[in-house]
Image (cartoon, rainbow, N blue to C red; front, top):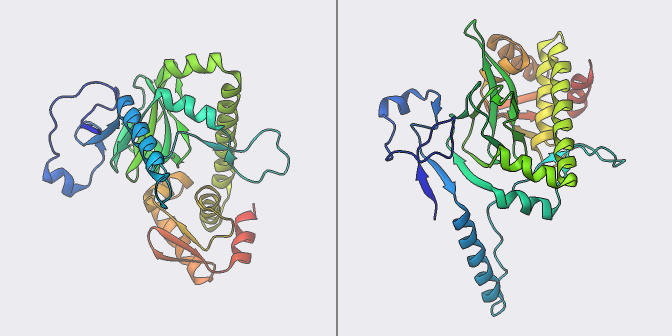
Length: 305
C-alpha cells in the first residue's frame, strides 16, 4: 500500500511525525513549500512486490479471457541522452537496457511530490540521487541580492541531485506534481562500481546534461530577447514533444521562471511574446502554451545566433 507522510527536504527517508494538513492561509497564498508541511506518497519495496504479485495474477487471468494483460501504469526509472558513438542518432534517446532499469528499480523508492514542494535545498547533505519519471521540476540558486537564478528545468528521465563535497549545489523544487525515483547515493555508488556498463550509461547522461548546459550558455549569449525565447521554445520542443515539428508546445513553468532562466526581466519576456505574436510566428493561447504558426520563420529565428 502507499504510505503518506510528511518529511524534511534534507532527509527524505526519515520517519516523520503524525500527518497534519497545511494551513488554509498557506494554501491560499500559493507560496513555495518544503516537503515538511505537505503530503508525500512513498512506494515501499514491499508494495512493489505486491504489485508484481498482482501483475502475475493478471497475466494468469488473461489466459482465460479475451482481454489484454494490463500494463503497469508506473514508469520504471530510466533516462534519455545523446549516445556517444551511435552514428545518425538525432536528439536524446533511451540509454538504459531493461536489465539496467530493473537494477535501478531494485534499489529505488518511488516518491510522489506535490507541486511547489522543495525536494532538497542547496548546501544540505546529498543523501539521495533522483530520477524524474513524471512532472516538471526546476533547480535554482538564491543570490545574495535577493534574486533567484533558475539554473535548469528537469523533465521525465532527467537525473538530478549530483553534489559537490557531499552537499547539494542547487535547490530543487517541483513545478508541477511530480513522480521521482530516489536512490541512496552510497547504494548507487556501490552498484556503479560493480557494473562498468551501467557506469558508462550514467556518464553518457551526465555528458548529455553538460551539452544542455552549454546550449543554455549559447541561448543567454544572444542579444535579442525574441531570439532567446524562440530558442527556449525550440529546446522545450526537442525535450518534451514526442515528435519533431510539433505545433503546440507546453510551457509548464511560469513566465518569471522563464525570464530567470534566460537572463531576462519579466517585462522583456512579455515584450518578446508580444513580438512573436505580432509577427505571426508563435501565438500564446494561454500562459502555458506556445503554438507555432510559421514553422519556417520560427526555425530561422531559433537558429540565427
